[in-house]
Amino acid sequence: MKILSDPRRKYLLLIPLAFLIVNAAFFRYANQRVEEALLEEKLAAVSDAVDMLAAAAEADPLRPWADHEQNIREAVEFLDRLYQVYAGAYKVEGDRLELITGRFYETSIFEPLEHRAFLNAISTGDQGNVVVGYTPENQDYRELHLYFRWLPLYAPAGDRCLAVAGVSRYSVVTRIPALVSAGQWASMAVTFVLQVWIVVLLAHLGSVWERRRGDKWRCERDRQGGSG
Image: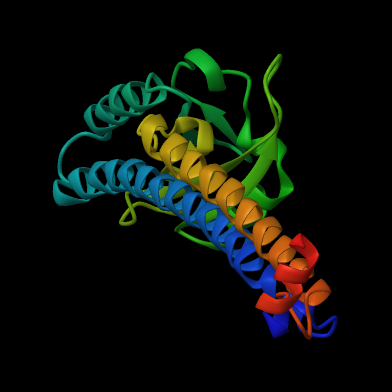
């Protein structure tokens, strides 16, 4: 009770509330990290699909390139049909790249060749990752994580095909269950209310203790005299 009545120490009562705030910040950070991990897993999945196309083309160099190109086109178009996944295949035509695959669904208006960061990446590496931002029509801004690969590597640079696949946070269809998030924040809210109630109660008891410092109870004689 001395702590409660001491102006220099009474703020110690706020330690539980401060811990609660830190705990809430941690829950939020943990949720963000889980979402980032899911995005990384989604990017790894589409990147592996592109690598499988490259491995198939490079495993059979004697096969006519027209057959490889047909397989690449069909596989890339399959990827592009996935929800909020971008995929495209390009063929070198002179000094430019020509899109050889159809575009589907949500990412159909996205064109990576319009972004300088992507052009720089594909001109300096056989494969790699790059992040570009864009805003689809009637949708929110998002960052698209792209993976590209030139294939086959055994072919001269002018005869290669460029396969690209990309995902954003909107591509992740596996979400943290709403019940888990709701349970976290509900427990935090209940704990907050209880903590506030306890602090208010202790503060009130401290003020009562301060007012009764000294003779806190009347002696028996005083009570008898008062009653007489």
